[in-house]
Image 1 (cartoon, rainbow, N blue to C red):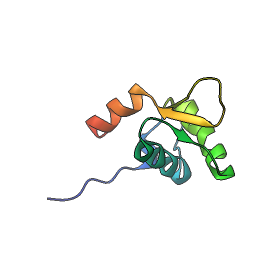
Image 2 (cartoon, helix red, strand yellow):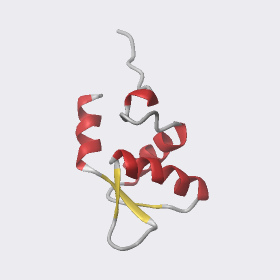
Image 3 (cartoon, rainbow, N blue to C red):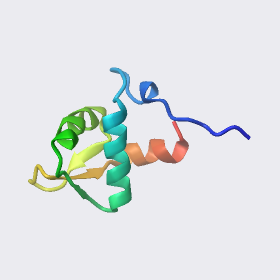
Image 4 (tube, one colour):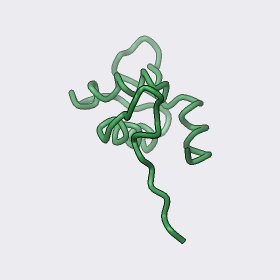
Length: 79
């Protein structure tokens, strides 16, 4: 059985989200409920993740993000 690979190009209609954004999504998923942004690279990647609808801000803080239901649904369906 061949292992399926996820290509960044298939994630958004406006173009690829890129490897930094995918790495951010993995860290948010691994952190559980919410993830605190601590690196400047994360702040650049969160812009693409927000535009794609994969993450949302937690409360009024601009330091904490969580995965959205849309992203979790796509992840479960392996799109």
